[in-house]
Image 1 (cartoon, rainbow, N blue to C red):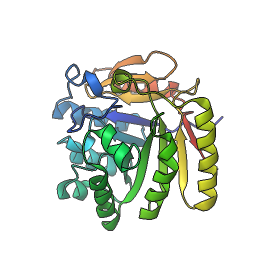
Image 2 (cartoon, rainbow, N blue to C red; image 1 turned 90 degrees about the vertical axis):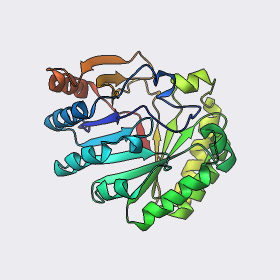
Image 3 (spheres, rainbow, N blue to C red; image 1 turned 30 degrees about the vertical axis):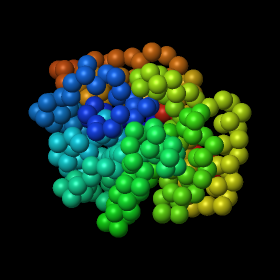
Image 4 (cartoon, one colour; image 1 turned 180 degrees about the horizontal axis):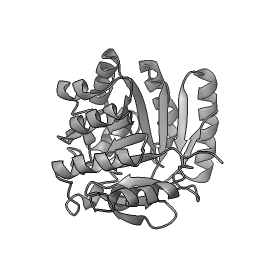
Amino acid sequence: MDIIERKICWRVTRYCTLHCMHCLAGHGTKLIKDLSEDDQLLSVKKIIKCNVSRITWTGGEPTLCATLPQLLKICHDNNIKSIITTHGLALREKFYSALNKELDKLRFSFDGLEKKHNLIRGGQYFEKTLDTMKRSFSLGFTIEANINVMQNNIKEIPDLICKLESIGIKKIVLLNLMDRESAHDNNLERPQKEEYVLLNKKLVELKYLYPNLEIQLNNYWDENDYYIVLESNGEIFLCSENTEDKSFGFITENAGIENLNLALINQTLSHRKNIN
């Protein structure tokens, strides 16, 4: 049996400067509060004790979390790898200086080519994100890209991948749209099965064209998939797109380590599939 990587997704803040149509933090922003700085530091210490090997930092926009540089430093010192998902509009020198080039990756999010991306993100952000990516490359960081796959952008995804590859991206993660929060509110839809078949064919062709490009498809609709989200208020969720999310309590509780360990035991991560 394959060993499941002990990784979590930590929605370290729900705050963001954008209002994307598919945001997973979405309408719950005013209802769920972020942990205090002290509780965030307590939480990362408990995460270390659970032998977590990787944290995907998300939000909201994680780079707007004032304590993230400090949290990253603690993770570095304990050999926990970090992937920071970002819209790339708030990266400052202070944040760059907190990153570890050996352990950390910046993963920039896209929703299509310029016109589509800007529509979904609610502003003229496409070129700004590309500029930040180029800046991050020049500083020597490992850069990846997320692309959210939905019915209204699937046809232009191959062209977007070609554009990102031309900039120097070596790994692209395709995220199948989750029917949650803002995506549900804005009536965004997943592509039809036949559209996925066509996209997959195009992806195989792109792999042949760009053999050094890694393309990973995160299909969260796999019926056996369970992954962990640490909510910004400290609640631990085992998530699936086929069943209701299951709470394992709060990491800030006295039993926080036991809570997280129990969730980790139930994680599967079967959504991650590479295009070959």
